Length: 37
Image (cartoon, rainbow, N blue to C red):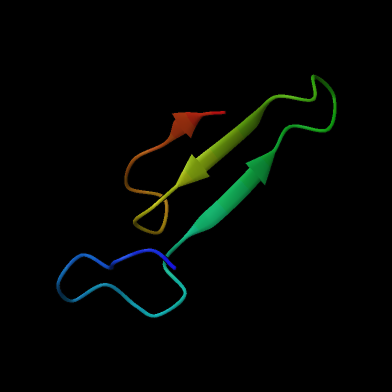
């Protein structure tokens, strides 16, 4: 499991998929930062 940033919610991790392009993004801190997968 991922270690959480201090103060981050338990479910702060997000995976976002752009259905029109198929591009997948990962956000480890509830949409503050995004990383393309």
